[in-house]
Image (cartoon, rainbow, N blue to C red):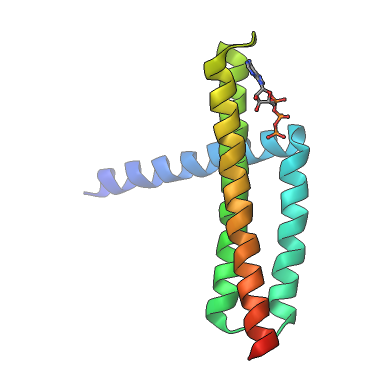
Length: 124
Ligand SMILES: Nc1ncnc2c1ncn2[C@@H]1O[C@H](COP(=O)(O)OP(=O)(O)OP(=O)(O)O)[C@@H](O)[C@H]1O
C-alpha cells in the first residue's frame, strides 16, 4: 500500500513537471497564449472588482482557464502537425483548423458568459 502510494505521488509529481514544461515551452513560442493570459488577468481583475456573485465569478474564472487549456491544446496539435506534415496536406489543414475552432469556441463561451453577467448587472 505504501509503495503504491509512493508510486502515485511520483507519477503526479512528474505530471506536474511535464505540465509546467509544456506551459513554459508554449509561453516562449506562442504569442496567442501570452495574449489570452493577459486577457485572463484583466478578466479576473474585473470579475473581482465588479459586484458579482461567487457563482458568476467562478464561471468567469473557470471559462478563462478553459480558454488557456484550449490554446495549449491548439499549440499541441500545431506542433504535431508541423512534425509529421510540414508540407501542405488537407488533413493537416483540417487538424489545424479544428484546433483553431476549438480556441474560438472557448473564447466565444467566455465572451457569452461575460455578456450575460454584465446584462444581469445592468438589469438587476
Ligand atoms: N501543413 C499544412 N497543410 C495544409 N494547410 C496548412 C498546413 N499548415 C498550416 N495550414 C493552414 O494554415 C492555417 C494557419 O496555420 P499556422 O500553422 O500558420 O497556424 P498559426 O497561424 O500558428 O495559428 P494560431 O494563430 O492558431 O497559433 C491552418 O489553420 C491551416 O488552414
